Image 1 (cartoon, rainbow, N blue to C red):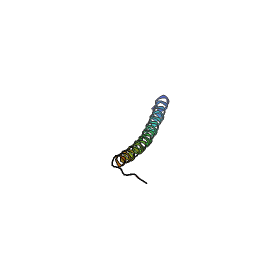
Image 2: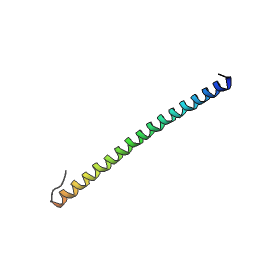
Image 3: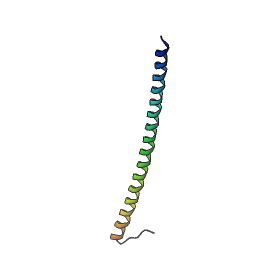
Image 4: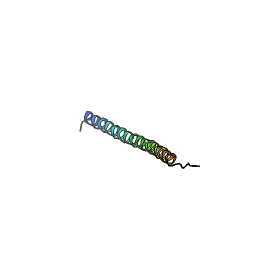
Length: 65
């Protein structure tokens, strides 16, 4: 194998490994963002449930303390 072929092989291996690392990082960041979005959505859902329960109790003449 010539020196140019070895250089091209090493360069392509380096570029391939960098692409894999970038893909793993992008996947991890996407997963973290999805988790954060799910927690925010759950918080809004809990708040909405609390507000609905409070309004329902007011309509029936009961109050939370």
